Length: 539
Image 1 (cartoon, helix red, strand yellow):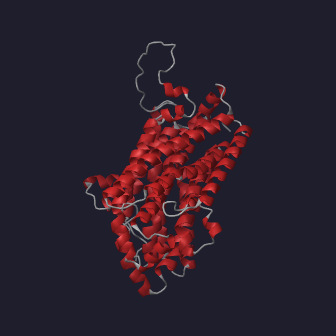
Image 2 (tube, one colour; image 1 turned 120 degrees about the vertical axis):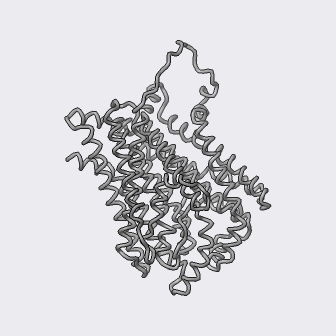
Image 3 (cartoon, helix red, strand yellow; image 1 turned 30 degrees about the vertical axis):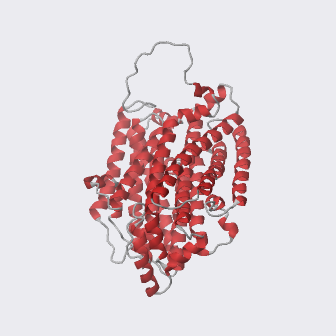
């Protein structure tokens, strides 16, 4: 197989997973649009007038709502903004893998020793990702187009092709960012985490600008600002040629900088090495007593990471709480959304706090667990797991201790952030029952347990695809929860979502779903131990 063929094949798992996510998003939103907005022009115009009021309040998450009386306008607002972010995150992780992961597995050194130049190596690996991502995005957009045909309201094929081009552009920016960051750090794990954090930061910068915040010229730092300037699916929609070319130009510059940095640095080392000072020789162990305690030692080593998650989630919770009164009043004035609220069992401000806050918190806590799973997979590939096992720790202990530490960290994050939300609700004169709120907060732990145990199982089975599969599971759970009530799906389909099994404990009990989550977590933990014992470390 040629080097280009190997490069394309190395991205096949991510390409397939992102295609599935993008296709599901497009299909469900396209078909769901007809169910929500109606079939006649009058119904859709009324829906658009009402939903645009609501959509402006979600501009910190979704693009500006335009032409919601058309299929193209709805897909631009509801689907492609979030799909572009997911593809960009995949690009960051893939770039980190190309820039650093191949070195950790010894592939880079092997190819260079066979006579392949550094320029050809990274250029070919980059070309492989371009091809794989282009095919994945094209297939996802084609599935979305099929969804519009099934719904009886097909969008223009040329507009969908241009939308695919824009998603590809922002994906390549993510790839270039991940590859460049990989040249500055020593491990794929750090490169992926840092690159993703930077990408989300510039996404939130653009979201702040969309929500009316004055960020000035800083908005141009976000590729998502350039992405939002083109709306090819709208009626008489246009593509901002300069903004689109700028996206591809930024991606090319990032890749070229990464190639240049790779040409001058040592294999296995970062671009800039920090000076190492001499430290006095000591034979004493660390004075930190927490490092001597099982589980707590892992939490102690990740304390700043945990605090950062708690502060970020708490700030988001306060912001969402500040919108509750205005959002529920606006939604109650929209006939179609009033029916949806009744189906969801939302009759008071406190119910909306529960639905909005805990649904958001669960999704972000899932992301936190997925990041941990990425670290577990990196431990396997980078030799840390081998060192832990060589020190005498059993594989069973590794599995159990990882899960326990993750649940402790999740408990700290959700406790602190929920406390901020509760205090915010009091400040905005929203009467939230304290007992039910504490219960709803505590019951997020079984969700994290089920997802974390599944992640540990996937890491024990196939570390290289674990993060992608776990992420796809979280996205699938989110889609089912969002659309089960709209389409009146059978209850058993709704229960395929981890978030649906969590229920709405702020307003009613759902112990059957919680028990199911615990059973899933226990079964996956046992299966993870079996999978970890059967697979050789590093394979």
